[in-house]
Length: 113
Image (tube, rainbow, N blue to C red; front, side, top):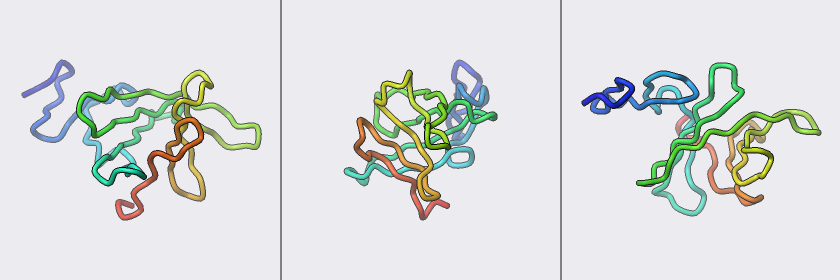
């Protein structure tokens, strides 16, 4: 049951564009929980150089998104698309967060650390 990239889904592998490899999300990714729906999760998978992050959503039919790293004026980094701030990934107080238009939508699953 290999996909177009040769990833074996029945063994838990999925293709990551930023890793350019078949990965298991729970091994390579950071698990995030939706703040408004306990059933929705997201995995963050960073490229080897951390220049990009790929968002893997649990919802059926929702495509992965790839965000680019950008330096922040106050220091540190955020990952987003063309500075339009539709989704924004940041490390805040030691935990990963995903915001959309300034509203927190996902936060790191502390139990998964």
